Every structure is written in C-alpha cells, then in structure tokens.
Length: 236
Image 1 (cartoon, rainbow, N blue to C red):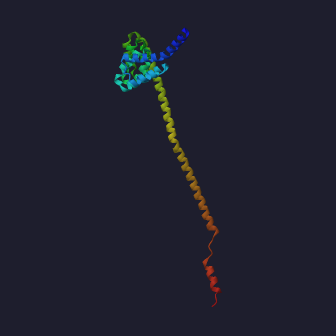
Image 2 (tube, one colour):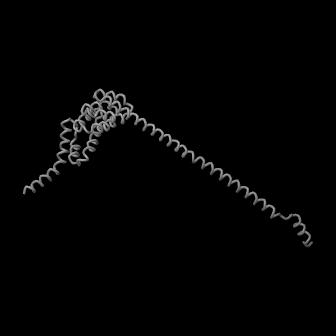
C-alpha cells in the first residue's frame, strides 16, 4: 500500500512540476512588472519546459516592438524574472530598438549586475557603432566589472568590424559578377550581327552570279534575218 502511494506521489510530482515551473515564470514576470498579455501568459503556461526560454524571447521582442520607448523597463522586468537570460534579452531588445541600447544595457545590468560583461558584449554585437557609449554605461552600472566590460565590448566590436568587412567584400564581388553578366548580351549581339552581315553578303554574291549565267546562256536571235526570209518566199 505504501509503495503504491509512493509511486503515485512521484508520478503526480513529475506531472505537476512543469506546470508549476511555468506558473512560477508567469508569477515572476508579473511581480517584476513585465507587460504580460493574456495571450502570452497562455502560451507560457502551455509551453514545454525546454521551450519556455525561447518563447520568452519572442514575448520580449514583441513587447519592445510594440513599445520601443519602454524597452529599458521591459528588459529590466524580464531580467529580474529570469536573470540567467539577461544577455539574450538585451540582444533581442537592442535589435528591436537600437536607439534605446544604452538604456537597455543599464536596465539589464541593474537587474543582474553579475551579467555586466555579457550584457555589454551582446549589445555591442547588435549595435557596434555605439560600443563606446555601451562600455561607459555598463562600467557605470557595474564599476567592479569595468575591466571585464571593456574587454568584452572590445572583442565584440572587433568581431563586428570583421563581419562588416566580409560583407563589403562579398557585395563587391557580386557587383563585379553582375556587370559581367550584363555585358555578355552585348558580345552575343555583336556576334549575331557579324554573322548575319556575312551571310547576307554571301547570298547577294550568289544571286549576282546566277544573273550572269542567265544572260550568257539565252541570247536573242537577230530580228532582221527573220523578216528578210519571210519577204522572199511570199508569192507576188
């Protein structure tokens, strides 16, 4: 009897745990002030445990897209509820509202100071042109992590520059290929024009030769001889 109750208790715990975990995420988001819509809450409660993190990124992205000016508050509340996802929240929010990147960085680090270097690196990867402002903001938000922040943003900025140069090179190569492809029909039309001109000239020459042969092979008889013969044979 006791074994049966123990097994039933374990099964109930396994079934109930995912729902409890999802409910805990929803409760944490609401407690942090995240603008969670009823639809988003239903999706979180219905999601598999392994899918909650990715789904939450989509929800944060939609929230920032709908309200770019509120990006910092959205990231702060999401990071408060799920501090282990601070860097990815910053990546999503910086992509949706790049003009808010420094405020987003500050909010994320205030909610999760231990994530300062990762947050600064993520933001720099998305908005590399703001690397100096990101470094300064992150260092001010977490002075004890200033050295790590500076190193992380420098690495991300360097990688971004490398990718940008690679993209420029690829674009230049594509432009050269396009130009070659555009010039190709001109060469073909030139060849066609040359061939047609040559063929027409040959045909005309052949036609002239035929006319000459016709003139030589069919001479007309003299008209005077025929008339004289008719006059001498007629009776008087």
